[in-house]
Amino acid sequence: MSGDSGGQSNLETDPEFQRRVAEGEFESVKTGERTISIISKTAKKALMIFISGIILVVVLGSVPELRPVWNTSAGVERMSIPTALQIIMLTTACIIMMVCRISPSKLDSGSVFKAGLVGVVAIFGLSWMMSSFFEAWQDLFNNTFNDFHNPVIFGVIVFVLSAVIYSPAATAVALFPAGVLMGYSTETLIALLPVTCGSFIIPGGAQIACVAFDRTGTTRVGKYVVNHSYMLPGLITVLASTIFCFLFSTILV
Image (tube, rainbow, N blue to C red; front, side, top):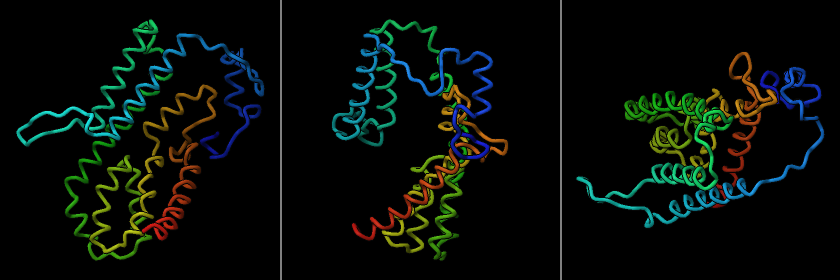
């Protein structure tokens, strides 16, 4: 998939992939052919441990009573989902390393680690900055749009701002109270939920990580940054989701 054109590209005709093949990066790979690989017992063990960690995260998220609680000055506090997820996933990784005898020196050389590290660095700074900005100016923003009654333009504003807030949840928390003050119906606000997912516009952690994952070089960020491989699929998804959410909200609400 090409970032410059936004469309799909066959490996046989993609110049970047062919350049990498010519340089010997894919000597064992032949386009159009698939080879059967033998999965080792160690890989199966790692997969089962990883799946167990995911199931545990889902269970703790679905049943809050299973998460630990402690007393604070503000009262009883229960462990949050993000904290539980981090603890479980790090513990799961540690168990995989011990059970499967994985050398720690190999971790930082893997493509997954490199892509994840790039994603973390790319997204955290911008996300924290915009979250702090809207947290400080939320009251002013809500009061400014108190008498604004155009859900289409409001949806466009939410979509554009979600590109810099970098989090659908944070976008909804920061901007949807203004929609309530504007008097929008429940159906309208439900229909506008997908427009909070504009974090793909400016390539961030997920996009950069996926570009790093793609060894073929066909997933790219274009010359003008916003002309990347995820722009067209993202826009179509947001538009279609908004239409379907509106239809479902009129039926269910």
